[in-house]
Image 1: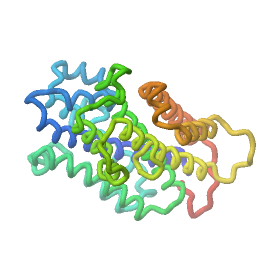
Image 2: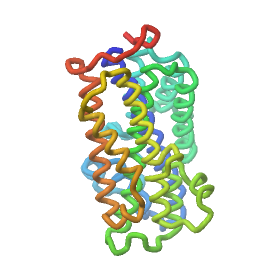
Image 3: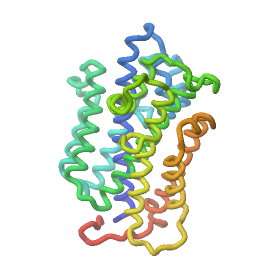
Image 4: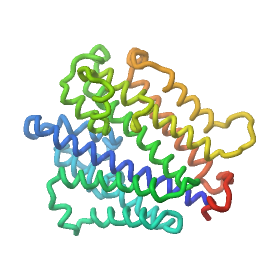
Length: 328
């Protein structure tokens, strides 16, 4: 597989996953804003922190109004991580490797791109909730088409790897915002919060129904954090993502000669072990923000090591595959 092809597959899925997460974040905040005082920034500004673009937002929108937040996250041309730009970048990556992805994948992402163009008045005239719902469903449809039409070769593995790393990152960010920004005092962690905020957090992660099925008791901050971080079977939990990331990296390594593990293998294994054999009480006692911050650093380093090994042409290692899987 060419390193540029692997790189494009990885980033297509990262950007589609990013757009889907942002659409859900904003969609939930739109609904939550109905229960807040008019003009309140409470359900909005934390989304900027969750996206990691607070400095850029403050520079572009000094007033920081709710409308500014929505514009910045959904359509702002100056925000490289806005939903519209994420889909545009994903489409450009897909266009460059059309011979690798399936026709159905291309048609879906190309259709998403044209739907979000400024001259599509039929879409942008819809109520905001319907716009966001359509974006979210379109991204989810792309996942389904990818899983239903793409052979389980190296192309699918790199696609899954990008999606999982982005998903783990966004889950930790939205949870960190809730604990660190809304509960800034360590003495208050685990205290009673308005249940609506925690329901909105679960919905932002697409986790509300599965959480209620797993736990019939009252919604508590500690239980929510445990579900989003440590649940082994919920597909958006950090632990689940780390398990699949480690599994995917093992497949990409293929039949490499056994020996001393390299930096990528060590980091992936140690990160998975750290988050598989810990308890939520220990994480909170040691500082949940600090634990999440360390995990985000590990995910960033993991991405850098993946990029160094597989995507930088001068350093990319040949992948063990067979002609049916070769993408050149």
